[in-house]
Image (cartoon, rainbow, N blue to C red):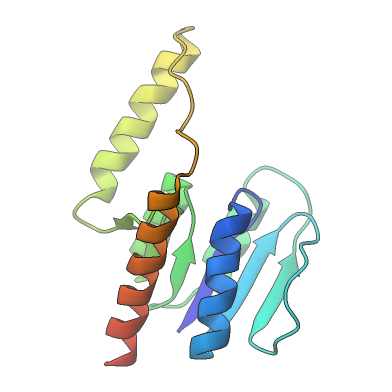
Length: 150
């Protein structure tokens, strides 16, 4: 199993949690972004820089993942594609996207986009809180523990 990070928009504190988990577990961690991102010097942590452009990083992740891989992303369409390929998707607040909830998330995303396109200010996501960070770390640890038992 590999962990892929949609790294352009991933908060630094979440990347730090992922770095520590990769060092602790030895799991392969790959950051995909259209700009260089510094990663710790461990053989199981890699940076894959792609060209700039709309969905270039997302498309590269989809091209490279295999069933059972975990992708860290807040991009709901990317999460849907990951699930369709047999992978897992976890957002930076610790929500695991599943076949049961991804359709609802896509519908809500599209609805909010329609509101924004019609001029309604829907605001953005709330700032990542300490409890969000802790919840993400707990969900990641739970996921990794379940995978190591298989």
